[in-house]
Image (cartoon, rainbow over all chains, first blue to last red):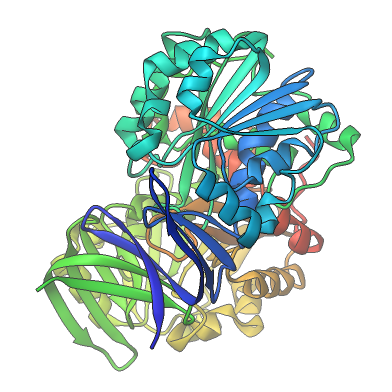
Length: 287
Length: 287
């Protein structure tokens, strides 16, 4: 018998991955959580039957959600990750020696525990002394915390289920409050091909709160449409950082997807995407 | 009953598209040819069960295979397309008023006839007076012709079946002969994620024949991995054309995917791709 996991988009598209073994199958009060071994993409985490992470291509997503803002920020000491229960974003954030502390607020302990056991590739940095992993509702944390951060990363699932409030205006007003004067926020921004409306509303919302807003793209193997985006906002600094190449070289860090070319190229959008987002793209450094 | 077309990659990945109607199902001496109506991606052409074109995203492929070289070449008057039986590349080439003649050499009359009837979106330019559509073997044409061209576009299927010789050295030596001193060739270059070896061997082959070689990327919805490439070679001119933005503006043409930003960004490669191709990327304009 051949086993496959299938992720459907509406009733018109589906991507299937061949499964060789089910490693974990559970449910929390929030959602269904599965980790499987696949034939072609390594281990894979699914939440409510949607693919979150595969070992084969997780480097793309995690490189792009973390290193683009981290190399753009002049001095990112305190970073907050909301969601990101697999730990991959935390892992990449902590590769930067300038980061003194990374708080990760994940709502679902079942995701964190399953990834600690079955996805060490992404969860390997959770015990780093600079990591502060909290099992809490990110929305409540953002409303009640009095800490401030240099960078906040919203590493969320799609705007359905427990992640829905992470796409709302009240949440982003709190994000603004929790950011210092040099603060930036980057958020999982869905697909330009299939989620035009979500991208527009996310950017519109951010543009009502922050002076600098924008979007950048990346391509992975496991999300429908493959071309996906991160939406961002910033209080002071551009993310289109002109000297990023020299900063990357000086860091001595190397990445499987991210590099100085990719940093520049990620902001260069196809016409069909640029046209409908144009009004909300306000990150225009003068250089 | 729900009908789906499914394209498999090895035995580990499959993409499925919901079909509402079969418009054409036939076979030539070369291959199986189907055109279906899908629920989410418009009409779709399949050859030997591999997806060639969908109405929803064909603009990406056709923009990128044609406008990148056409805006890089100083004066592309004569263009040759090998393959491209759906007509989409021919359509985009002929949008450039500077093109006086575009010869399209497609081996399979069944593809051309089916597309003329069921895919007018791509086949609409085949009767243009500047189009010369020939039903011939592209390999034989390239070996026997004495015409020369400014630009040759290899718009082929994967290196299996009738397209296999289009990836060979003998073919590219003939391409070199058929190009004038300002000539360029661009070829369908497969997936960086899944076809690393094909990309390496294509570039290696071109680098043995042409002084300038390179690769650029695009993202569509219907090919496995979605991040795909075009491989190119040139006798004189760089394709990383510094003044492309002003040329695009002067042309008055607009495109759904391609623009000056995308032209620049397409050459900026992820680390995992750049590293294994590095030796063969010889398009390094001095600016």
